[in-house]
Length: 280
Image 1: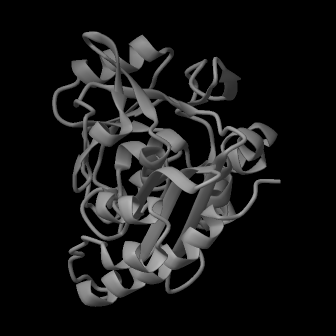
Image 2 (image 1 turned 120 degrees about the vertical axis):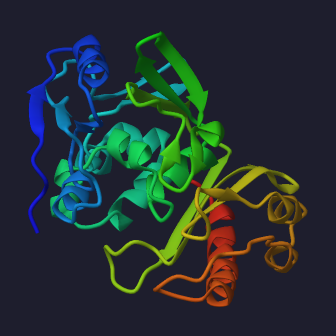
């Protein structure tokens, strides 16, 4: 299929993009990597009257490490994250997740901001950002604000972004010497959206793990933290953590909810072993 007719505008700046979103009658959409948007346009699941191209806006890409935080511009491509020495060193969870995202052609164009803004419940990066206790910078008609990742994802494909807002950057703490991370997912084929996935962050100490954050994707409308399992894993028992998984995944075309819950336990066992690894 081909998309319905739409107008096109290339934003010259962040303020220009916000003005274009607010000044056009009807629904307007931002065009960044377009790896989700173009598909929905072609299937006519989305029919905006205007596409606002932000690829030429300066200052919306790049990776920096400052003040104990990793900051990533919204237009930063997945491939840039995958190749970055700073991400490998300071954000090992992101580094582990990147090879699981679609295929190289998609990672060459897709952006971190687009992935978060689209908020697909089976996507890897939203769960990673929640596990990292990250935050998201948003620019809009009323100025700029910062939203915690845990508060950003509101529902199925629904976020804290307003219709005239632009996601500009994400930020999360750098990994410390005692930081441990884990990531795993199960998909029918490599590059497909995951049936179930798990992103995890913890601190390692003499008595085991602390500050455990376990965030599943593909099991609900948003990334799902499993706090009872976190507490059990902090206590050192993997099997008690599996028993404590308070998940109720819906059935979908890939698997029943019961199968997804079983797979969630499989992934927790795998990721718990990763959290026990010593960082190189």
